[in-house]
Image: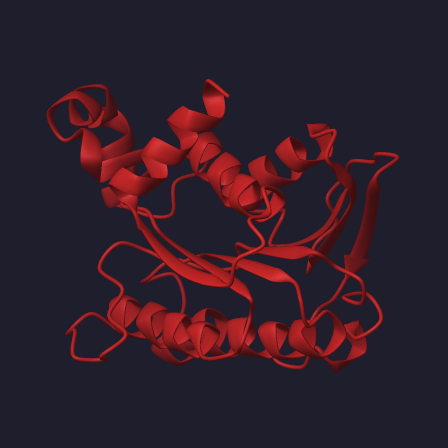
Length: 226
């Protein structure tokens, strides 16, 4: 039986990950850590409100005894300042991972990155550099199993308020987009399912794996027919 902690379960991918994890018979318990209330209850769910992810010291006991973490906390480019984008993308991730390693040294870590993430820091796109910086820190943190997910366009299965015009346009053209450029799109629920499954399905081997969009779709397909 697996004990999971999910950061960012009020978001699109994290929300699907939470619901999927709660349905799995192999998942004993799920702890949600976030800045806003979920608005749901479940016998296997514990909800912990934590306002400042720049300091996760107060989560030492919350993160103790966890088998894996699904980290989906993030924001969109252009919605916040560059400094805030770096803080949320890099600082929050690194701080959460630091405390998780202290509390649950054997836990696996599943991280929502993004297509084009650049661990070398040479990209001209801040988002790519910051996601790459976070990836590099996680892979160096010593987790026995670290999984980096780099989705391309994440299709929101349930309608939502899109963050900008580009996302509104992508949602509108998605039916054609998914046929013509299938390797550049992934459904939000498929992505979430893959992020949970790699943590729950323990291998016993130490490994660090980067999943590009095509790999994520293959994982989701395998899960659907398991």
